[in-house]
Length: 445
Image 1 (cartoon, one colour):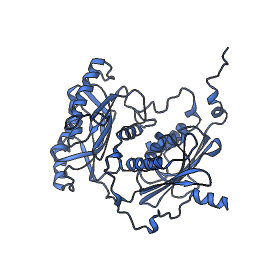
Image 2 (spheres, one colour):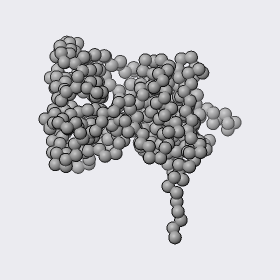
Image 3 (spheres, helix red, strand yellow):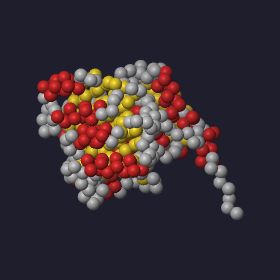
Image 4 (cartoon, helix red, strand yellow):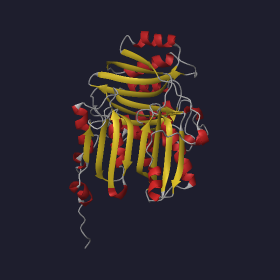
């Protein structure tokens, strides 16, 4: 007779030691502290950072440690307005998402948002479509035009481009019924039409790097899924390295005292930077045991102590791959040019019309975030001139006159990328930065 194994046993420790979440607005005068203490488990750091990032909270500093089976984090955060987090709904959401309720067996985190583990809006019944392929000017316009022609209403979409590649996740439903599309013949027709569009000026090269279209089944966090799609392209092997003068520096060293591999990152600070780094390391099957994160208002500095899942440190070739993957993950959200924020009543074909106008004005979309809340469409497009030249203000005025007739349009210039400052000795500058490496050295002495 085989021994009985209680399926609830793995949740026993978390039931008797539930996670504790504290939102502290008293300790610091200029930011909110989010403190999380919990039993350690695989992927917990990514879950925590994901919750904070999806709420658009800026992480100014973070201290992370997870040795000995216990996970203890402190995050210094601000809201989107650069103020302390005082909104009761946001505080309640963090406590619920990271607290004891999040560990109830069978509870599905993120059931309120398509492909996201957390999110503030629900878009209802939908079909998720994943696409990746060679990028070109006007591609997004063609994709949305095909979906409109096939009577698919785009409820939400996230689009990333990097170097010569594009990846996007699109959430659609049927125009007539407002329900998810589940007819196999229709799904096949949609898939074939979209694959044909992606192959427009490229095609599969036999290595999985060409046109790719599929319908998503698992509700993976959308940003994480986009990282996975672009990582699968092995884009960093193309020999088209990112610009060396943007201030980004990634190194991997070995910590003899505690047998860790130490990842040091210094780059221009921006929202969701920590999420992108932790997400990439997690999907590469590395575990972050300790980390220190800080920012000097321009540059973010991160020091992460990692091991492989089997407890070993990184080999030389692994370290080189980690560096290239992190450089790619960091640069995917870096945009130049302008952001176009559009808000208006949603209708079938709206995205097709807007992206067509962008293409006609010689603009290429580098990133896009499409959301529908009720009957309102709220879309953000990051655009630049297709020729690589600065965007002419006459072009922006033309957009205002053409697009602004049907929706509200707000145009913002993306801040330029700062050049890397001089560094002495080739080392990363660390001002007022707590380092676990320094702590280990003191303990050794």
